[in-house]
Amino acid sequence: MTRANVQRAKILEQAEKFFWEKGYDKTTIKDIAGGSGFEAGNIYYYFPSKEAILYSILSGQMQELNSSIENLDKDESTDPVEQLRTVIIEHMKLTLGPWRISGMLFDMELRSLLPEHRKKVVKLRDTYDRILRKVIQRSINKGICCASINVPVTANHIASMIVRSRLWFSYKGELSRDELANDLFNFVMYGISERPNATKVKAK
Image 1 (cartoon, one colour):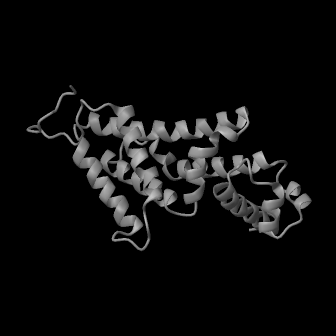
Image 2 (image 1 turned 135 degrees about the vertical axis):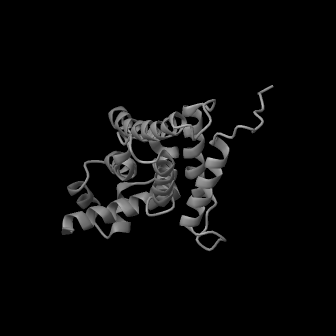
Image 3 (image 1 turned 90 degrees about the vertical axis):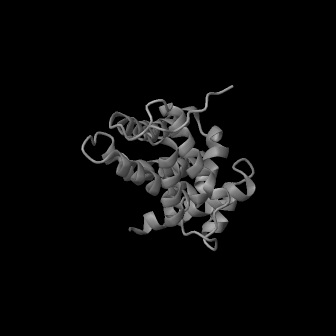
């Protein structure tokens, strides 16, 4: 990694911390520079604005997640159950790993991006949603999962359970991150698998 990339990463790390602790609106370039060991003016060598820093954080998270599962987009040969396991594990690793804070920022500060940047980040999120929905649909087509499930809603349930785990998960807890991912995968599969004798409860 070049010195410029190291410095850039340091800025993003400090910005992420300040955005979370103080909020995007109340964080200043001076705050970020001080935390990074720079003069305020030096930040502009790496980023043209505070908003550009936020965009880099939020887009970086989604790009990393998508790159870990993009091979599944057109994969019609791998067992869809293993594909779903991969999506859940990779998403959990990212959610509870280095991007843990930025994931929470995603929910809170997406609105703070310029419209063109917000559109790009949402497009990245839509790519993830599309891949997850394809994986679920493949499992239905193979007769593994119940044909009556609503694919978009099921995908949202899965993603939400993963994302919300960052609010309560602790590395000092009973389960490791990988064990939690496996537990969630088993929970999901039990809920959506095709079971001939299962009782389907209709909404009232």
